[in-house]
Length: 288
Length: 318
Image 1 (cartoon, one colour):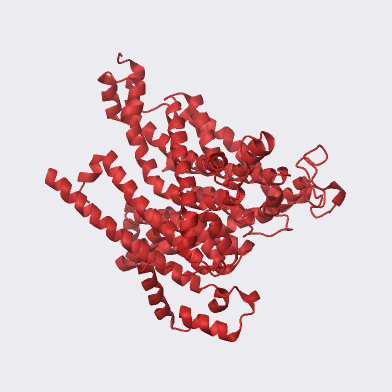
Image 2: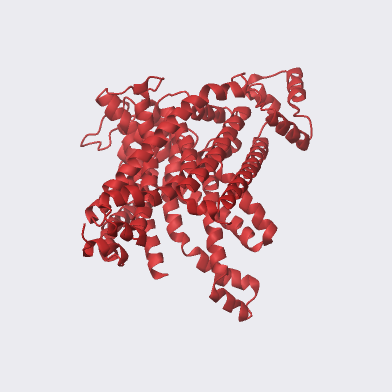
């Protein structure tokens, strides 16, 4: 084998970023458009689905997908598409709230660890390590054991079970920023410790979190819907995605469309969140 | 050099054992206090919940037997002592020793999880090696496959597989009751999202390894492209993914709850779900501690494997 240009190529900085950026943008546009549609569905569901999501029509029950009911009908003859659109707001709210709970808890833990002295850091560090021994769904189930099933419990459960992972990342981020030159100079300028933490360290340490949070919302929607599917989250007959999945479980082998379409929407939401999160991440890496 | 290595291995073993013991003790403590937060009278729960209408004498007897009338710290001490004797208590709802329930359900879940993890590794390795370096179409396809695979929730994937392969094609049964054919769909359902995560991590580090100087020097020595990938670079690519395997196993246990429910397969996950629904505290505690134990053991195993695959870590003084 001769050493031609292509062989030595690995040592050269790869010429890929230019192309890669363009490829990401196609997915990005689709993801943003889909997110806009989700937001419209949350704020004004009637625009996308004019029918009544609770209108019962027993004679129309269990209709497979057809032109008049694109996603079929459920056990009471309600239109699945209409119910999905009307359930968007509640489902997204659960995902957003769970992420907020997870990030908030993690931020408090990380702040205590980084600014609370060595003992606090040790305790928080050990606690996080122990929490890692609990798989996410298991810690979520523990929370539900205490709070009992329901949409609020599922949201809190998903939020708390994601907190250890976030806490570890935020702690590292805080430590890096604290050791940086601009924090040193802010301190030398005579800024009070509180001001340094709030105005200098936090904004810089939390900037990369935007990407993480976006990815997290997608994951939270999946986890919350899994809990609902297991009957531990939002309960039927609410037109929420998870609740639709929970009631559809009984008809899994006879009416597949009842599970497939809500699931597809959840997958699409996660993919959109992942695509946007990744491009935010790439952007923050490029600018830093 | 040899002596340093032996000493570093001994120090590593001691530190791992200590850390494992601490994590297990802390997990047991955490679970104990979390379960004490469960609202309602624990004695009543032990007798089957508020619906059981247990007599005052029966409640008193249960309080006496389980020590619910003792101060919390005494109860905690009793619980820890019982754990040291490997006594996990009796299920509230099934009236069986928790150890027996675990003994019945753990093997099925372990088979499921191990097969799924193996399949995930095979899929991830295949996906990683199939993407030729520099091919943008390959990278784009791989990227998409990975993102989609890791975003798919288990319950949804399982539903699709049942709809296509059981209801539609009748290749595999929709319920998994111990026959090998019944294992196929649950294992695939569990493996695909993990494979997506592993492949993503592996491909990132493979690209990095292929750009490093040792790759060029291997090529200069006459190594073929395939040989470079499989003999040199893959080792580096597998390391971070290996480190993820303990985490992946935890993820599999969580996934098992969903998959065992969909495929009506007896196992740890399904017992846990039932126990949470009826607030059967001893069973929940047992399952959580078993999974913490598995996590701890796997962390040590993957750590040991990492040291085997990457000798640099073994001699590194930390």
